[in-house]
Amino acid sequence: MSEIRPQITVVCTGNTCRSPMAERLLQHALAAEPEPLRSIRVVSAGVAAFPGDSATENAVRALKKVDIDLKDHRSRRFSYQLLDESSLVLAMTDSHRAFIRHEFPEDETPVYLFREFMQDGNPEVPDPCGGPLDYYIETRDNLAEAIPSLLAELRKYFSKS
Image 1 (spheres, rainbow, N blue to C red):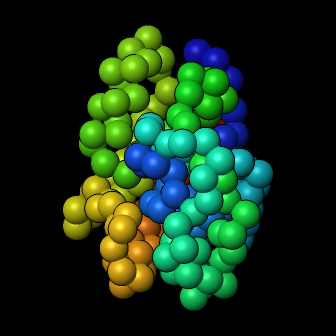
Image 2: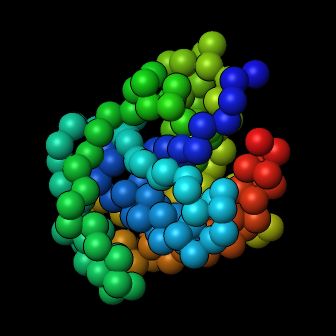
């Protein structure tokens, strides 16, 4: 088994809404944690992303409301290189996880859903793309709600290394 690399890749479809918001929310939460969690790099990508796209205006606005800046985000396509650099992958939906397993069947990097470790609620994060700001705020809140259970799981996962 290869040594755990301290990088988490968050994945959605276009890498302009959900995964960039999740990336920044998780970065923000990890910055407040002790080592080794504080040093984990968090990046995001999309399974069907057009490289270089900005985050949607409503994604930027939804995070700005909680004092997190997303204006500098640029999309990237999920790739074998990103997968190889990742300790684990956090997907928004089961279809994203299935895509990763189908495209990279030989890879053993763990792939979880961002909300998978919560006791209640839908483990999938619906796509707000094209919707009003309220949809993005709801998405942001769904992602933020998952952070405590995700941090608890990451503490266990990264204490093994």
